[in-house]
Amino acid sequence: MSAYLDIIFLLIVAVLIFARLRSVLGTRPDEERPEVRIVSREEFEKAYEKMRHEIEEKMNLAPATKTMQNINEAEGVDKVLYSIPHFDRADFCRRCSKAFEMILSAFANRDEETLKMLTGKKLFAKFQEIIKQRTEEGIVAETDLIKVDELNIEDAKISSKGIAQVVVKFISEQINLLKNAAGEVIEGDENFVQKITDVWTFERDLNSKSRAWLLVSTKKQA
Image 1 (cartoon, rainbow, N blue to C red):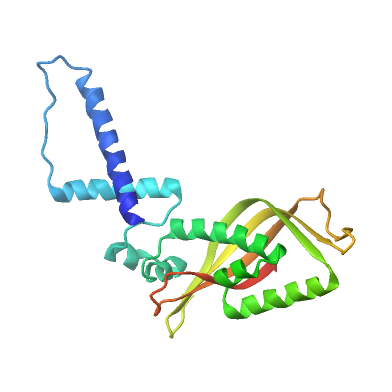
Image 2: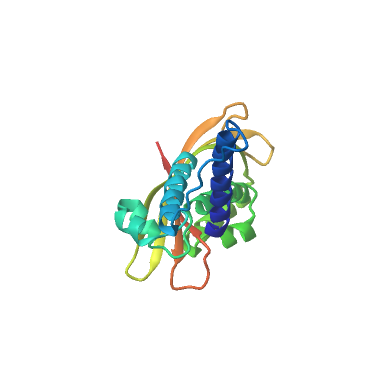
């Protein structure tokens, strides 16, 4: 992921430099060429990193490349995230958003195969229990995720055993219904869009070769 960002940044830098040179060249006669100054690699890297930082701030992304400088300057949650191998904030958030949508849908549709793939063992067992109970009672769940308004990383930690956990808050708009065996709505309103705040915890074993993050905890926030 960081390699792609490097290419994008280099292209942006090249375009900006070309645009500036063009604006200068376009205001002078042909015989009055602007003076070209050869910059050192160090000067170029400083200018490049400055521009990278400005672009990342506008895009609301963590730095794509982990350097000793930004690791040492990071604090709190960011410092933990920097210490997680191969962690990319933007990519992680995109995957979380997709997982959020898939898990909500799978739970409502009793898709245990998808739930097993995306959740930890204990949470999967809880989902199974609820699904089993609803099936026995003839209750059908319907969830329509309208959109995710906000997605923020709230906390992160790494245990002494090398288990990384990242807490993510989702604020979304949903329509949730429960229907009985006769198809009658027993909970919820199909015309009412709820604004719901969910706090989900994703976990990854840093000792494992797998880079998969599994959902291990969910809770609603008032």
